[in-house]
Image (cartoon, rainbow, N blue to C red):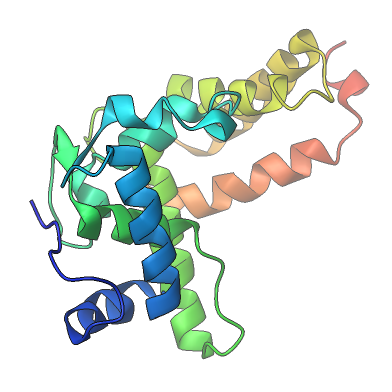
Length: 200
C-alpha cells in the first residue's frame, strides 16, 4: 500500500521529501504521528481519524478524512477510494496542507497553488466525476459559514444561496476545475459584503 519500512532521515526518504517538500525532520514528526494514530500498525483507516480531537469540530471534517483515502490525492493520477493508507500516502496528502515555501520560484508557487486547488476541488467532488454541482457548492459554503461561529445559521444560508445564484449565472448547473479558482475567490467577496442586504 506504499507504507515505507525505513525510518525517517534515511536515504530512502529522499524521494518522499522531494515529492512533498517536507524536510527529513518534518517527515520524522509525521512518522511519529502516523504510528500514534495507527496504534503502531502499518496502515491507517478512517476510524483512526476519529481519535483526532481537533478534527471533531471542523465543519468539513468528513471531507478532510475522505481526502486521505482518495487516490486522486496521492500524486499518481489515480481514481476511486481506498480503505486504508500507508505512511507514504499519509505524508503526500498532508503535503497539501503545507504552506508554500518562502524560497519558491513563481513557477513553483503557481504549480503548488494549482495542486492545492485540485485537492480542494477533489474534496468537494464527492462522486469523483470531475464536476461540483451547484447544490454541492451551496452546501459547502453554508457549512463553512454556519459553523464559523460569527454568523447566524439563517444568514449563512442566505449568503450560500446568493453565492449559488451568482455561480448559476455564469455556469451551466455545475462547476469544472477550471472555474473552481474563480468561484473560490467569490466566497471571500461574500464574506466582505453587508450580509443584511442579501437576506431581505
